[in-house]
Image 1 (cartoon, rainbow, N blue to C red):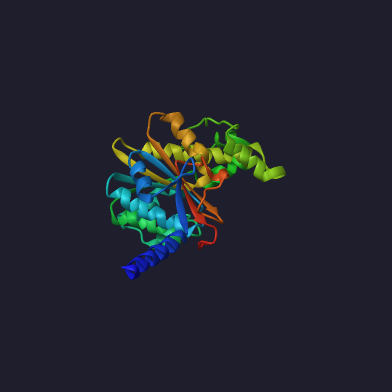
Image 2: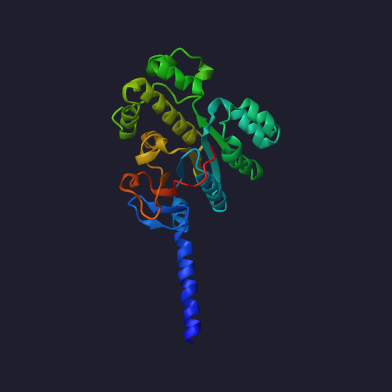
Length: 284
């Protein structure tokens, strides 16, 4: 009997040590640790969810795909992403339809350098499971115009077709949002109001294409850099401005040296914070 108890204790201790060594933990907005299942259950009650990533975090990209699969089992799912620009929607549709192969897509759709490892799996899942995938971001050329040519007024003279790839003008803008102020602080002497406007036109455009694609009864899962949705601002600010009654959810990925307690600065960033060990593999 004593031997049996000893073996049981050793197994329990071994499991405890192995469970403590985890590359990530999930927390709610207040810093309370939660399970993936609890996060999934909560998110399934939403209509639109913004998954804010760190672009080079391999684990976050794996979780994005897993979350996509799990939501797809329960909801009529639509995907969308910052990483694809609105004027490339035709290429995205062709790839999903199978009329364009991966090589052709990569050479014509202005994909990100880490597309093959990080975003192609999401696009391939959409293709293989007949899901719509929306290219939500403003073409970078026009965000550049806002930054380099005097703010939103630089967009007044572009063509009607070009305007169809961005949020409707004029753009509502609140320079006092904490995330926009943080951009100026981070950039120091290199910061300028036009830089913040360029960020805002991206947020507004992504919100616009999310809402123009979404239909009642569907579930929209959107992938974007966490800065575009942290602290319930950015894209979410524009979504709520247009559709305040929708049920939104947010996720933010952060990295820490110790994942077993969420640092104060990372609390409140989103409904759910995925805290990843800073030594976890990066994709670039």
